[in-house]
Length: 463
Image (cartoon, rainbow, N blue to C red; front, side, top):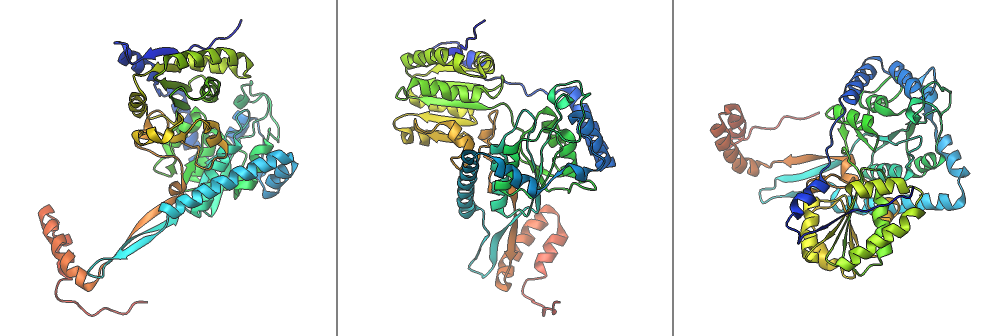
């Protein structure tokens, strides 16, 4: 049986467009009650029993048997050996990716991630002290889903920010275990490790790593165990159990975001080869069946040409079944009245990835307010951003680009306000503060400010 991918065809000229558009965009991030309940139990168990619980769940779900969590720790020698074993081309690609990502995030840190201060007319010093987090945890999917690029995108900005300890958790399930879709009967003292992931850990500078995964790994990082150190923040993608666990531990630790299905929106004026556009739509659709790929274009003939390229190219794709279901269920080819209207619709969607496939992308970029990443021009495929362009590929999804940003150096830093009020400044600020404090009924606040007015006591010597 041959597969077909026919994204819904919409037009803003159609009186029913708004309803059809809303239906196509709808995605319910419904939580599975069974998963939520199980995750809550796992978190509580790890918090209570520490290493023992981590070992039990690792054997139960991953089939990985160990008597101590230290046996599940990967070493720097493991990272180096994996890197050395790679073909030269893969080594070069990993190093080039990390180098470009590092360069971008160094520029990002310089632009807005450094401490600053100034003195006002009274000599009062005001500023901000920017310091890195002490320790972060990075969750890296394992088994069938191995993403060395995500490891680089999480670890490198942490390094640039100045984080000293970067703790990686990566499941290495045994073939036939529950985590790999098996019965769970298969067990071993060594799971399936991905050399590209370990090599990426070497290139990106991961400090320590443990072959644990799932909610139990998130719990170990959030609460700490006898062996796994407690971290300040957890970043990185994972399955539904990982996402649920991250939500539940937020507050005990920081988290990056809870990501939904991957998205791409292509704004096309018809000047880019239709084959390129079709493949860019495929690049997100191949992630999973819930991924969303949308084309906005004022040229009906070009939209039809893109559909013909979809038909032609789909049989050549190894993940054709996933692409077809994604495009059929959530894809859309939308004809707009103009590129200006296409930009307005894009702002309503606030996509994760936004390609401006045009000969003059800088004409349209100023009209675009909401997107995780904006790719300018026909040669800027979204896939380049995933691996090696430089900006981070961890991006807000499901419309959250309206109020959130890509992962960056700033996610691995915290900011402290600096205030040093001069004697002259206290005379001015004290009156303002006292007046406001009395208005709020906070007399001690007011008196603390007033005590510093006019009469200045001698300062005691400090240690």
